[in-house]
Length: 114
Image (cartoon, helix red, strand yellow):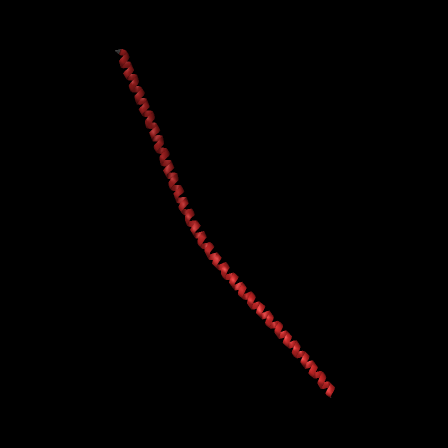
């Protein structure tokens, strides 16, 4: 009978140790889960921040593209205007040269008649 008491005591001690061990594991798991939930929450915050930054950059990019398009259009218009101005100056120079030649021709005729 003494062996049974010893066996029961041993089994009870073993069960208590096993319960303590399992309780310790449970606490470790709870702690690990809390850490992971904290990390997930932090990563979700970072993810949201990155989404906001991405949206801001996309908006800025769209604005810059619009500015670039306007500048290109303005450059094209300025180039067209400059080309037209050069053509007008060239035409005026040709007309001035022709008028100068007419004046010289008239002066030459006048000198011949005198």
